[in-house]
Image (cartoon, rainbow, N blue to C red; front, side, top):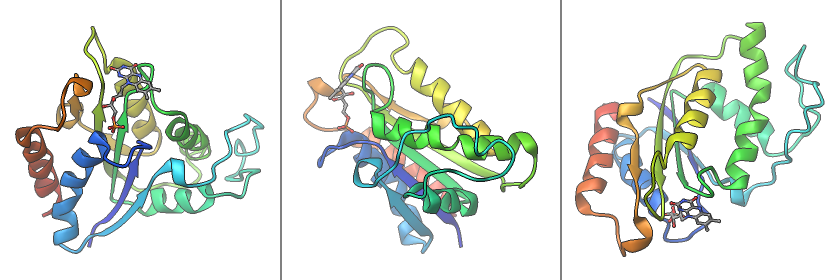
Length: 186
Ligand SMILES: Cc1cc2nc3c(=O)[nH]c(=O)nc-3n(C[C@H](O)[C@H](O)[C@H](O)COP(=O)(O)O)c2cc1C
């Protein structure tokens, strides 16, 4: 049975990026995978203060929701992230979660705890369209997945621009998300 951690980065109820993500998750739900869904807006995570406490051992000065999330990341076979684009970047709460994974980056650097290999996915929506619109978030996602031993194929990301001109995501794009989920849930 696969363990999947899904991080949904949008604060909106009828979020486009969450919709893409849910289509991807559906085949995993149907085949009985274990799925934990986290929205960083709904939980309490303090921003990393660069105190250095995780440098020599896996120790964070904050005991908040990240304590459980470190465990979910370590146990996951698959991690999926969805997010809207905010100022060509991520919404603050999602970026805060990523920054707190400095503890896992340090573990990897020390090679002290071998966190298992896993596969990562990414879904992002943007309101408008301009040159290299997704470049910065793709850079962050690649860096993040690389830091937590997660393989990532950028050809399999689903990036949808011009969403503020649409009143729904096209069925073709939703189908692409479902096909991706089906491919990796079997
Ligand atoms: C604070 C804020 C910043 C945004 N910044 C950008 C941006 O830099 N580029 C862009 O194309 N759209 C931007 N948008 C629009 C969102 O990316 C767009 O509406 C997206 O589809 C929302 O996804 P969601 O429905 O999953 O929340 C911004 C929206 C908000 C609220």
